[in-house]
Length: 453
Figure 1 (tube, rainbow, N blue to C red):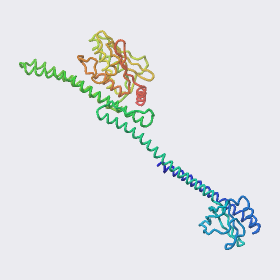
Figure 2 (tube, rainbow, N blue to C red):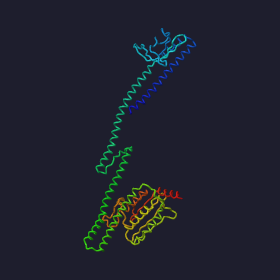
Figure 3 (cartoon, rainbow, N blue to C red):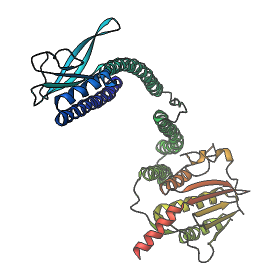
Figure 4 (cartoon, helix red, strand yellow):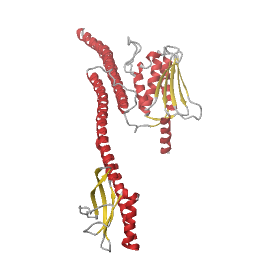
């Protein structure tokens, strides 16, 4: 393709240049012929003969061809001895060769001429030596052949280099794919650092593989944790039923056994319901249920709901509203945001010791709105703050404290759905959880309220 393109370009240059030279030659011959005819019309044959002799002996004789003669007979004047034997073309032009002695050697020159019949009965032919044009054509043809050969060689070399580079980059992707297929999810496509399309493809593939590895790891952890968390209530349920069946029939024992089984069943259902909720939230991609939600009212209602629980545990639960006149409205799902606030407050109450303090407040800034829940409990070490957002992750490995380890996972899923940022910070002492809604959530709520009004 490179050679064909080069051939087309060079051929076009050759054709246009040759056509230009041909037009210049035709113009020169026509101009000379018109000049001689004008001399003949004004001065007759004698003036024409004198003009041709001057031209033959002058500088024009080196490039122009003249002959004035009867159609059958010797020439009267000119630098050509006899008429050309070739017939004219349909446009009246003669293309012939001229033989002449030059420096003791006989040479043949190409020529182009035109013939007119004069009123005196003589014939006048004016032509031009086409040696330069032929030489130029020969040079152009040689250059064209050389350029085509060079283009073909360079095209083959360039094609080999480009194809080898292309195939090597594709092989890297294939090797990484084979590594993944063999079970090693840590394989990644190498990035050359050139920033080209292959690098962008590699970065996208690596991001996809990172996501896949994270999901697979999370799935494995979830499977292990489900097995661990559900094994205990199922074993307790089985033990109660076996003991009840083996012992003496007693309605009170049956009732206690069934009540314990119901508690264990409720715990299992609670775990599965939490998993389903997280899966539904993570699977949502539409926001048609979003509406303007006032976080101030939402947080105040949640605190009011959990105040009796905190008082029963000897804790202080307080809510601090934003400054007067500041709105804390975001665009979101009211039910999910209420569940998120409840999970955060419930976790704070669960892990804060007796006499501890739990504070909830809403902070509307210029470009964001943040919902904050801070407690004075043991907190979460910095190295575990990213891990506790995964499902079933609990810092208490013995798992004696009530709970499933899904509360913060659900909060993280709701934050992702709303485009919010979830920050776990040190409250010194205790944990501070910041749910930060971006400017676009605030702006969308404002636009929705304006549209409704």
